[in-house]
Image 1 (cartoon, rainbow, N blue to C red):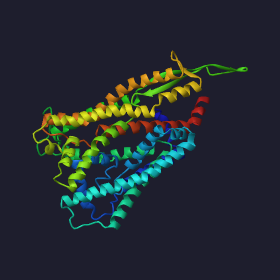
Image 2 (cartoon, helix red, strand yellow; image 1 turned 120 degrees about the horizontal axis):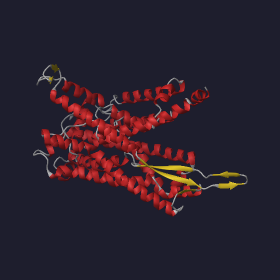
Image 3 (tube, rainbow, N blue to C red; image 1 turned 90 degrees about the horizontal axis):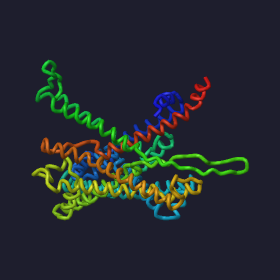
Length: 477
């Protein structure tokens, strides 16, 4: 990264304008998170959301990527999940249907049509999710006797669903506005802002616990008393060190790649020669990014959410109770309820399934986004070849072999990152008898690091473009 160039580019009015627009959109996004859904008493539904999040890991995940929109029962309750789901569906269809694949390879015009279809698909998905969440929350308020005197009318349903769908579409539009500024992916930036927005609450809680000296203060070598809780101090210090180590390895893993040298044959046309050069084909260790982790979380959490719906409608239903018990992620919220006698064999079932699904989804999604046959064909058309490998089918087989080997280590790395919350909880259960709730899990931390690095690269590229003329003048001097 050229940090000096980035700071120098901030003197440019166009760069300042782009950065200002992005910050303005993020502020507007955070303001939307405070506008409640027009459905009865907002505080009533906030209580229902709190009860639901204690029983559903999928709800906690949605609350994380919506920046607390679910917990506050705001108009951005469904967040960006409809757009993300629509993007994944369209991407899968593009690889499965040849005509769509040809359209995606048709340059900017084809990609524009695919993006438009993704936007159109987002609307019905947002409507379905809005109706589902309002139904679940309303049934939760009835079962918990929170608001027995409130019965939503058809007008209430229409107004609430419209508001939540509009909130999701506005977020999609905001994400595209950020992307247009050319300094990062807009959707990723909004998710990044959502996760980071949870930190002030965590820091405030840690701060109040740190300066609570009711049980004593920290003594340094007997000659200095610090007004902090000694136990909390050492826990925070240990977490800070562990966090730095984890972030360091996350950066290394995210940046790791295999470099394959590509040679281009020399061509002679008249008195001129073309080609005869070398290039590189970088293949990332984790080409799939955080998508496998998101897939695995959704896959394992939806049965628990369905179980919650079933038990909300029929409290005595055994199937719903079994789904909640089997597919609920071990956490600080449900540990005392599901595991009253401490850790049992069942405690390890969810983490084991989670790890296996992350591993399998890494291979699956990498095979979709990294088409070795297509890359081999493009290299052959351009006169490129890998030394010691025949062009065409042999190149495709070679690239597949390399990608599969990288996927093995990448899938293991992603699985271990996803296991971080469970490993941390296990340590605390052994030491203190109860797990600790983390505001940023392995998934959230991976998203934060990945998006931060991608946005830094985008800012660095634009900064180099802006300061290119100045750099040339410096060379002339």
